[in-house]
Image 1: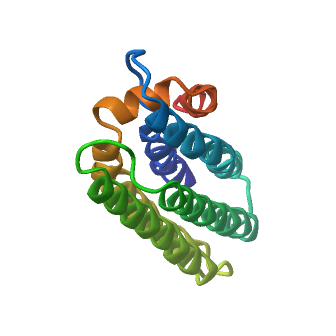
Image 2: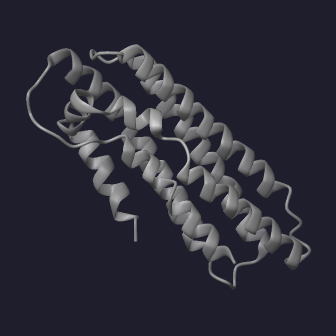
Length: 190
């Protein structure tokens, strides 16, 4: 059962990937500076999300006790919630990128990141509330959480994609820290 959870979760890493575009090389200093600030802040959070994903993947073997699964998943969801909140704060702190509709794009992305953070916090509460004494109930609870996760990995990120269109994505692609975040997060997509 937990394998479904792991599969749903690996979709979560895609959200961070959205935060690292790829593109041309026509520099705009203001935009490059904005991209560097965001990418430098995103990189450690991308690693945190990747580690949380890895922990859940590792704990999904069928011989794990419900208590172990609960503890690992709760911690992973907390880490993901914190990471998305931190990315939201970084985008907020960086201010609007120097592009058309930059302010709206930035605000939408921050709102979306905070919403993703809240969703993971709510999943943590759900995991904490699961009955580990009853294997059947526990498995059913995990199934519900996997469904929520699946929705979460498919939803959102429109604002993030929107933020990274065009010049912003190109500026981010020039940042070594964004390249590193993409490379490491991409490796987990197996």
